[in-house]
Length: 87
Image (cartoon, rainbow, N blue to C red; front, side, top):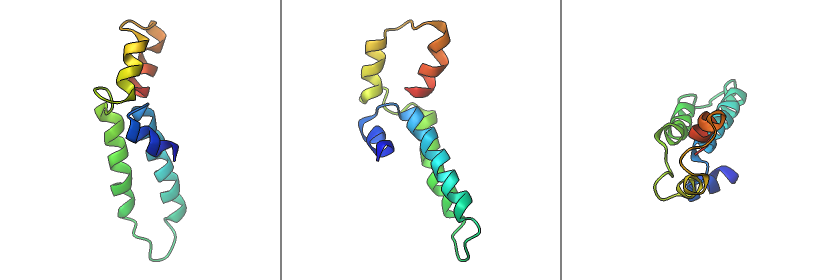
């Protein structure tokens, strides 16, 4: 539910994309040995979440845009990577 809310609101979409992809990967690993499982569907479920994480969704109209405005333009150097991935 939290991942869906993050995607819809555009808040922490990078983090939500990576977390969702890892979650789907975990489910895929558990379901891989199930007879009759459609193994090809898992990459189709993981790929869109990785696209959300890599494309910077939410940075224009979403909650990530508001977080960037509040956070200012020059965060401390140690937080640059964290900020880039999370927002």
